[in-house]
Amino acid sequence: MCEPTTIALTTMAVAGGYQAYSQHKQGIAENDYYDYLAQNSRAEGDAVMKVGQKQSELIQDSAKFKGTAQKKKAAQVLSSQRAAMAANGIDLSSVTAQDIVSDTMSKTSLDELAIKYNADMNSWSTMQDSKYKKWSATSQGNQYEMAGANARSAGNRSAFSTLIGTASSMAMSGKGLLPKGENLGAGTTSNGIKVPSRYKPPR
Image 1 (cartoon, rainbow, N blue to C red):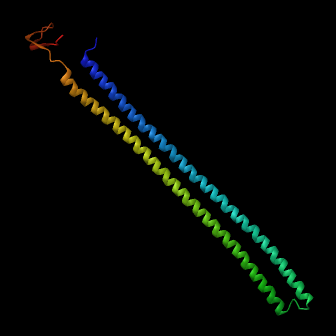
Image 2 (tube, rainbow, N blue to C red; image 1 turned 60 degrees about the vertical axis):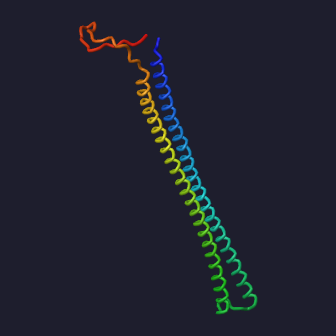
Image 3 (cartoon, one colour; image 1 turned 45 degrees about the vertical axis):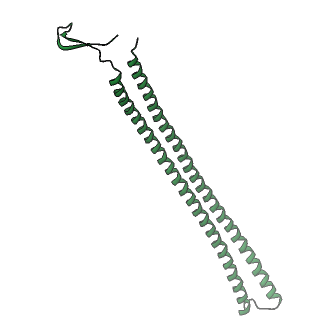
């Protein structure tokens, strides 16, 4: 049958070991949780960049379509102007006719440039917004990763501290709980070793 002292110290050791194990596992669980958040945050940043890239391409495609439509419209306007001038007896090779045509073409070119400029600005703005959101998501992911590492370290420190505290408590408790026994005086052991005094635990 185990002595009360042995039972108490064993119980203390088991309780301390379990608490330290729980603290260690909690640190690992928190670290895994933050790693999961970090991966999700980075994946979100990558998705934002892909969406931004696609939006930028659509803006440029739309600008090309508008530019083509503008050229067709300009060609129709020029054709109508030439037909109107010819119908009114204006020589198409005259300075007046050339000025009209030149003015129309200049305005058309400006319209085309405006379409391209607006598309470029919208495309740039979209990409900049996507880059910022990706940077923000990546930064958040790094913070989650750091938090996970800190949680794991904290769990390990708590577990180590618990083990040290348990060992210290056991040592202190052992001093007070272990019986000193009865002084039987000096004598010789069964192996023939002489000792100054012998102790016998009380029953």
